[in-house]
Length: 571
Image (cartoon, rainbow, N blue to C red):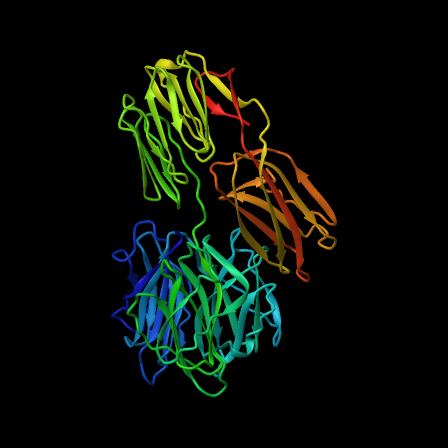
């Protein structure tokens, strides 16, 4: 998980004022933490105090005001000892740890992204961010003696909230903003005395909205739990919010916190000001919001959700280890059996003599080895059994667990060849023949899946497609007239691009249909694919039609392989 958002903030206010000092988070964050999310609160009821935040080793000396009774966020890089530096004019100005990340998201020194163009939205190029970054972290700075507008939004957005995007006089704060596929955002500066500094990116878990969703609660004057399940996907653990006080005359309170928190800070938002927050949500995708008046509008600009990770397999001697967002598998030793914990389901074999029993994740059916002499028997509603010979063992092509389970030798026992990797036979058996399993017949069609996907200008979208079967038989993408190759499409399994096959390639076209019959085997069924589309046209939206056809593998044959020591399923 890239970010961890704390339920309750931890006070890390320095005791020393009027100078830069170290702030040590080693007692508050786990090993490997590289970035801190802070909440800065001016608890004074009348005085606007100066503060500054920087990485240890940075050359930044900027200390500017935070208005009394207000708060804001800051994001800062940590050194190897989990230290950053802070400057506070008074201990009434509090610094809280609000979250942290195991990704190195921020720079030691920021990049100046200020503009001399005023009174209109202009592009902000963020070439310093890594390829694939979806959000930018900025520091907004106002050097004038009066409040001024410095608005931010993703490039391609049509939402104009600049009129309520002021920043306080001789002051600064931090914001997270989505960027397009070229890492562009946009800013709106009212004067040339407004500066914008790029500090880093929002992390690999972040997905921005090109245009925000208004989630302003109707209840005022109290903390309200707002459910976001209609707007963010299952598994999301945080959101990016912006609070805009649209009143031109009155300052009102507005703030947010993770549901279950008891945090209750000063939270005034001056007239026509904006405050940005990255905040955690609970497992039900709830967040707590406080507004004093419905003049304070709350906008949802994106969410944080961990990507699917890959299965890593070591050799048979050290066992099978898998670390992913969805499962954790462990093979302690091939002679003591196979233990797997997947989403709370235990799959275990005490030893080879008693055989292999597995509880299926999707079908809750039972697999068992009744006797080594008769080979592998499977009682499973959607699996196929092919027992070739007791001497050669038996092979199973499962439709929900895409593995070949081979009894290479009665004395050897059970070898499992994962869909993601191959494991060699033990040294004592490497002189014996190996076998390659290939389908004897084509896979009959079982599923046909269609999607119609639209992509706004200068933005990217992702859509889940759940499919069933053993293999993808064909993929078809239809582009209507108009995109002229600027609409790029690809299909992913987790982070692996499967169509097209080359990592740097994309499917594109104009007024044409692109189709492939390249077979790809599903690692599991149902199988979750991600369709990602990027619209590089900054003026017009474009759409495409996607069609996927899947099939089952009906039978398999056993053939000797030219290479010794491996068993595998091939398509």
